[in-house]
Length: 247
Ligand SMILES: C[S@@+](CC[C@H](N)C(=O)[O-])C[C@H]1O[C@@H](n2cnc3c(N)ncnc32)[C@H](O)[C@@H]1O
Image (cartoon, rainbow, N blue to C red; front, side, top):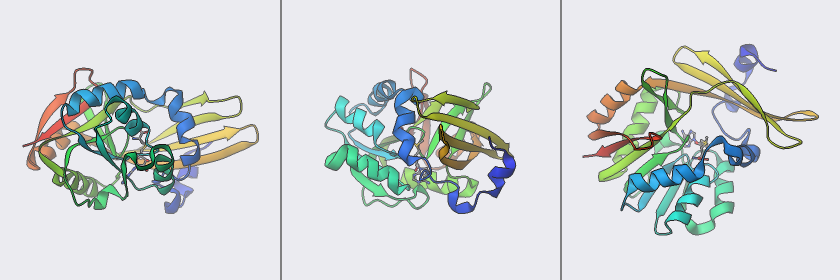
């Protein structure tokens, strides 16, 4: 269907935004792409008594919605740099959470949080079989590190940052409805990979996006957090999140 040449011919404006597939995002996610019940149980356990939460890459609000069902006392702020994703979150959650249409690379919110988390949002971890690796939606290493520094600045002392662990990406196709099929293709690159997401119906392509991800070794990330004044708490009991705690 596509190859690296198609990929390279995409203009920068089409790259690294979720605008391309926002319309179909929930259809994909709600068919088991993420297990939102399990994610909610894990995050509840990680944040404990903390209630002031920052979601990094809130998307359409699917995680925030489940968290609020589990604990209506959570005060959640969701940031995202894709307008059509935030618009869907607003339609889903109204004034139940705060929204920040921001790029995490320029994160600036006039308050601090007791916990921040990302579920496939700005960052996540994978286990490549021999070590954890950070997968970053911010595809430049220095900008990625600077963005993580800004996140830590927005945490209270004693605050935690939880980054979800995901399966290693693979190429596959999946029929979502009688009409709609989802396909993803991964193209390896020097310091990461590009992922092509696309949706097709009987007539052909209906939506697609290309996203270039940076891969950073877990040890480099742990060292960075240590410099930023955070301890690596480690994996949570279900091994679905890696947790840091600000000293
Ligand atoms: C895979 S979605 C995850 C959404 C949500 N956490 C969920 O579980 O459904 C990734 C989200 O991160 C957002 N994102 C990616 N890079 C970002 C950045 N630099 N700043 C803010 N948001 C970003 C995207 O716009 C997208 O909505």
